[in-house]
Amino acid sequence: MKTQNLRLLALAAMVLLTACVQKAKEKETQAEQAEKVVEKAPVYDTNQPETLLKAVAYAHGGWGDLWKKADVQYTYDYRSADGKADVSIERYIFGNEASLGKYTQHEINVMPGEEGEVIQYFNGQETVVMVDGEKAENPQLVGVSDFLRRANYFWFTMPYKLTDKGTIITYQGQEEYNGKTYDKVHVTYDPELTGKEQNDIYVLYVNPETKLIDRFFFSLPFLGVNEPVIIANYEYEDVDGQLIATKRTYFLPSEEGYSDEPNLVQTLTDITFNNGFTSENMMENL
Image: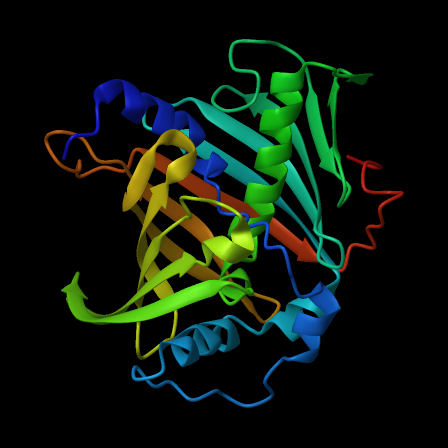
């Protein structure tokens, strides 16, 4: 594997900044997707790979159920192997994809090496960044914050986002990992809809018994990694009927291969739904 060490350092700092939020020219509204919720378990047929992702969405609790929960808040710990971390309170509204993060610790992606409380807020249209109560105007900080807001929302709703318009799905057979046999599903996006020359790629390991994605490989075109070589392993908890990936471990490639210990560990705790968030009150009571 030819990835250089300097790039690996960048990957460790920016793994959440993957260009996973596809901007399709024609995109279904969230309400339209919610109306499509399947009341009974969908067919799981490897000859029709799109059915595998529908089964994944159903197994997680269903987009319709999540939509009815309206919003979510949780504590997010994003920690690298050297002990540095970004720790935030995250809030999302599912109706308009509003996304807020209040950082009580920021040492990796958000103003590393600088002091001050940081609040990022994407209201569904634009992102505002507050540092110690003052609006930040730095274009680089605002740009990174905008990407993080969209990316964090994507990762939380990933089981449902994988079936957005423009998704190209291919079944790649079975593979054994850690004593289990998985169905491999290759996912990328139609460039005519996304407007991107190089789109994200995922190779999902779907457990045919639980219908959960326990493991996947993904690319990072944002940093020039155009092949799916970054590994993510997910562990789930049932939170009010939704299976949430509350522990995520990431392994980055090097010239020597992959290390035994993860390069990044992300944990989600204190998850609550139906908090009554609106675009007007998202920044209150933080």
